Amino acid sequence: MRLHSTIVLSLSALTVVDLAGCSTSGTPTDARAFSASAPARQEGENALAPALLSSSALSKRLLDESDLGEGYARKPQQPERHDDVTVSGCPALDKLGGAAAVGGSLDFPRKAKASFTYLDGSDSEVAEELYSGTEDNLSKGMSRIFEAMTSCPTYQVLVGATPVTVRTQKLPAPKLGEERWSELLTFIAGGHISVVKQTAVRTGTVVVVVSGSAALVDAHLAKAVDKADSAF
Image (cartoon, rainbow, N blue to C red):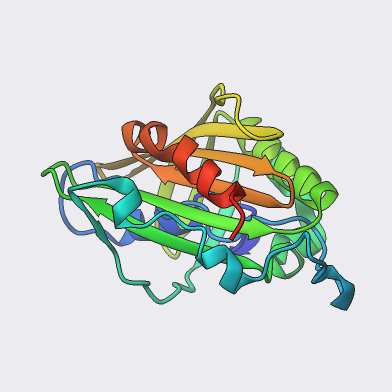
């Protein structure tokens, strides 16, 4: 199945692309794993009801350096990569098929994101993404993607001509919000390893996704959910 590197079908698409293109040794953690997670249809004009937040409103609810504390630097937005990606060895991902396979109808128009580097010498990163939609669409879309991903303990991704092995592990999520999902993703390519923890929490009509090194995700998830759920 041919995929685009920025679609939802692989929550790890951007991490996979970066790992395949890296040229230095070590075990970097790339926090940009979740590129466009969203339910399987876009809402119409009446979707801009008061309960749903615009991208601008979501951006005000993202964590910033003052929330994270000393030692964090915000990363500039990187241009999207458009490498072709082929996924094999995961029937559950294949079943998404159709519109899901090309990503267009899975992409939420209401979203905001930010990425940070933790300057402690560990080269660790943490990223947050916010999405807004109806509760039903958020619930079904997030459940479908995480269930598909964690149903395949190991599968292969081909990024251009570079093979990447992906290992997934479902994790317990902290009792935050109304629904939550969590997983650990390990990417292996040409001797390079990248490990990303990814936890998503739905609170009303907003989904909060925090990705990156496990310690940083655990340290900042609750604060991210509180800020996303707060009124302005």
